[in-house]
Length: 106
Image (tube, rainbow, N blue to C red; front, side, top):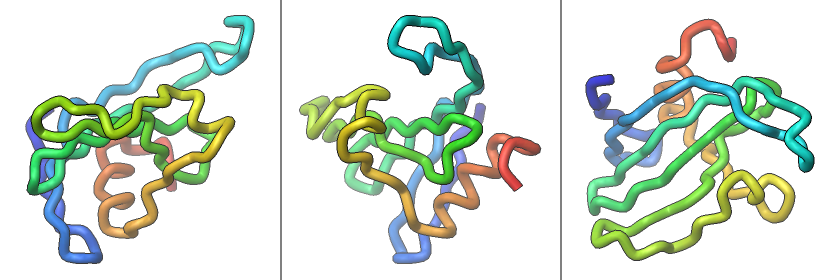
């Protein structure tokens, strides 16, 4: 995909890239394969947020955040959903990400 530039509601500017749709294991014992969407969001300072969302989730969740130099701020993988999820709430940013996956979220 070509990068998409988005201005968030709070005025921040983000680049959306590497959006993909696939399936992955949602269960503990690899028994629950479900569709999932993923996207990388880069802020003006070069910090990269790796987001994902299962089809039945209400929010995009940050699985990891890395600084421009590659330093990890955190990297929980999909386990962050079972502890303390960091969700994306900026309406303009969420709408732009959802638009990358037409027909999945109304």
